[in-house]
Amino acid sequence: MSLAEVYMQACRLVGVVPVSYFIRNLDSPAMMLTHHGLGPLGCKALAIALVTDMHITTLGLGDNHIQAEGAKYLLEMLRANFTVQHLDLSNNHLKSAGAEYVAKMLLDNISLRSIKLSGNGFTDDDAKYFSDALSTNPRIKELDLSHNEFCGRGGEHLGQLLANNEGLEVLDLSWNHLRMKGAVAFCAGLKVNIMVKYLDLSWNGFGNEGALAMGEALKFNNTLLHLNLNNNRLTNEGVSMLCRGLEFNDTLRVLLLAYNSLTVEGALALVNVVKNTPKTALEEINICNVLVNQNFVHLLEVTCQEHPGLDVQYGGVGGFIAKKPPKRVDPMKVIQDYLDQRKLRLWDFFRNIDKDGTMRVPVADFRKAVQQSSIPLDRYQIEELIQRLDRDRTGMVDYRGLADTRKQMMRDHRRQLKKVESRQKKEKQKSDRILKTFQSAVEAVTPRSSMVISPGAAKEDSSGPQHFSATPLSSWHHIVMSNSSRYSVTNLSNEHVHLPMLGGTTPYRPTSSPAMRSYSQPNLLDDSPRFTPGKSISAQGVRSDPEMGHSKLSPTTNSLTRSRPALNAKQPAVKVKTKKVKKKKQRKRADKDSKNPAQTVK
Image (cartoon, rainbow, N blue to C red; front, top):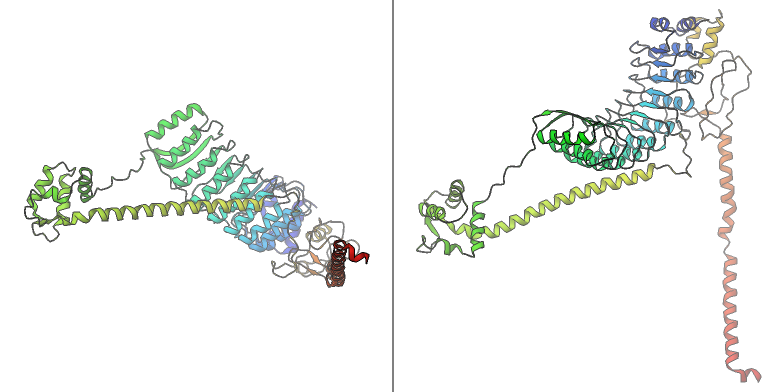
């Protein structure tokens, strides 16, 4: 039977409408079935047909709502099919149950080179599956996990993935929720990674803290070529932290920082780091939303003379460097400083107009005296001073308020210094805390030669995803190929039908330890594996044998039993102590005898 006939028969057996596009494009190595509404059963019919296919290398199943059940069928198909190299499962509502099946798929299959899993609702716990699977699978070169729900703990698992994986070159984690905590943990894994070349981290809310961790990672990473940090809430401060890492990096070529909160200062910092770093490899910097000024354009021209391959994309000329308005000078402070410099008192300054010494003078006389003096006050400051000294509008200025200006001025100065010191201290503590967390994360994800990294131990509890009672696809494929009339559509569409075995009836027994994953490729000429009653199946598809668990525990209990009498035997130690005491007494008697030789002679 041809592949088209196998697929048509499989659709009749499962009870779904065939996809005409699949039949028309069987000669093409790329089978793109995106937006075809296959569903779990349609995916099952497709998987039955592709069990023995050796022509299709690219399989696109995006947006087909295949769910975790469809991922289960694809897992069984890819255990026998070693031709598919590129798989697209984006937007299929796989959720946590599907994540576990995909992880098993990554462990079993040896032909996949790229897989897209965008928009499947994966959470932090699901990132652990991918971390465990890809830690021992160097064959996957491209991985797309964008538009999922990875947060802080997900960033920790993905950082572990980067630290242990030795094959992944393209990773897309855009549109997740890593934020500061996840960014720091992820960058710790990036620091020790030696393979990733293209990394997309846009729309993750890194913030300046994440930029600090990324800068630390870029100091040591020497393989990354393309880094996308668009829309990550970075400011000029975050870009300056990132530039600290770019000063030591000599491999990064493309840096995308579009749609962050950058201004001319951040743009100048980026161009300056290229200008001042001769060994830099940066060829493209994207800050397309930033308006720059003429100083930036001139600096870019000078930098391009030294680095002719540099291309900086900016929003246009029209930006400006925000200048703080000049601080308004307190006129009372100006008068006080004037008197201090000349070592004068208020009485000495106003005694010509205050004949009575009441420290109250008319407004006109006060204004005239200040204007005729050399005090650096303009007309507006004099009027402000008069309003403050004549609050009740009586026409008389009470300049006694100037006497308390110095004390208040010193108090304000000390208060301002405390605020500045407190703000600087908090910023330093925050940076130190982030760096400390980053360093501890690096130590946690750094692979050790003595550590055996397992893709995950077997789970014996029932907390795993709910399994589907699906007949193995190899048996379905054989039924279709046999074209037997005794199997009706109504019987074969039932999930619980027990199909006859093609080989012997020897039940399958696992030979490896329950703690290890053991998966075998389905053999079309052999019988489908049957399970021995009484042995449970764990959530990860590993059989748990009570006898095997007991045999594992018995050596430990025997060793503990043997060591217990030794711990309770205290009598020999007491005897040894008494012997030591007796020896000491004998030595003392010998010393006394040596001191009194006459007595011993008698």
